[in-house]
Image (cartoon, rainbow, N blue to C red; front, side):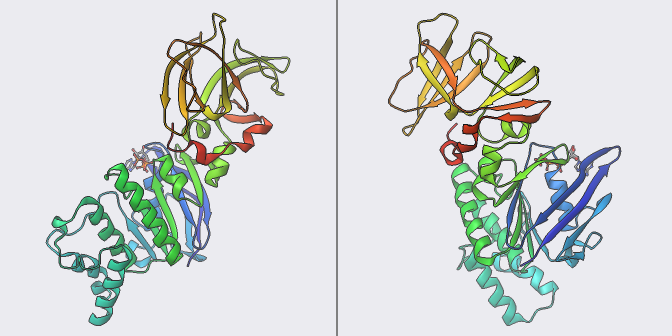
Amino acid sequence: MARLTIKGISKAFGASFAVRDFSLDVDDGELVCLLGPSGSGKSTLLRMIGGFERPSAGSILIDAKDVTTLAPEKRPTGMVFQSHALWTHMDVFNNIAFGLRIRRLPKPEITERVESALALVGLSNYGKRMTTQLSGGQQQRVALARSLVLEPKILLLDEPFASLDQHLRERLREEVRDIQQRLGITTLFVTHGQDEALALADRVVVMRDGGTEQTASPDLIYREPKTEFVAGFIGSMNFVRVKVRNGISEHPDFSLTVPVEDGDLVLAFRPEALSLSRTKKSGAGIVHRSIDFGTHRIVDIDLADGTRLKAMTAPDVDWTRGSLVEPAATAYFAFRDNKLVHRSAAAGELQTDRMLGHV
Ligand SMILES: Nc1ncnc2c1ncn2[C@@H]1O[C@H](COP(=O)(O)OP(=O)(O)OP(=O)(O)O)[C@@H](O)[C@H]1O
């Protein structure tokens, strides 16, 4: 088990920064997901921790030992990349044994450790297969075993399942979570799939432009997004731009009491916090589409100003296309200049698991 401490690291490529003054503490046995849009610096950060990239500033400590300038093989880290890069001229056993041979371990120990790594990833009896004879999912399992066999203190996973289909990705991420918990190995997992991050992580770091936008448990990220960016990035969210005058938002559909200074504001509602009622009033919202997901229904509504909203309703009420509806918000967030300035009391009670993967 190991603790990872990242202190104010930056990485500049020429004049631009891929990572900017990034700090994070990862606890013994914790699994942290780095989540963010393409180009937000996730891979660069992971590569610096693994020793494949030298930081321009800052330091990286593993169990209080400074490893900032150590070569990858001198660090107690194991990294699994998006493309597995297995050796095609070697069988599975030798792919996994390679790192142990370099370390000159005795032969019986190599055999024992490779076999237990194969068992860990569910590939016992695959040792003699050539890697070209494996499916994509099996190849990623071999890549994982190749890292785990070296017993790293810190496991670094850079979108390891990005190239696999959704079903397999879900299965493998469950397996990784299982292995990670069984071994109690401190893990950093890069992804740009929010469902993956929320399903796997003890904590999520939402990255943007090389910095941290928010670090919190998946549940808190969902229920208490600190910025408009995080609110829009995690789960489904509706945004409506309003002007606030005398503490009331001026909007034909969402006239709410918002205890903030007058001025422009962005109101944000989760689909499950939007309730609909039928109306005959012209100028109301119009149902664009309504999809039955069995457990719930997702209804798209167009407002008069062109804004499209998503509402989550009970599955058994059909909102036919073209019906006039009045949306009302039961919970909302209010953002100004990207920062959360107010959250209605009910917003803290939204349920992460109701929404994930559904909208
Ligand atoms: N070797 C390099 N030389 C120059 N610029 C680089 C280099 N590596 C990364 N960058 C830049 O740094 C920024 C962050 O890249 P990085 O790959 O870390 O992002 P990412 O969040 O992992 O993206 P993705 O999700 O697409 O993999 C990008 O703007 C990228 O173009």
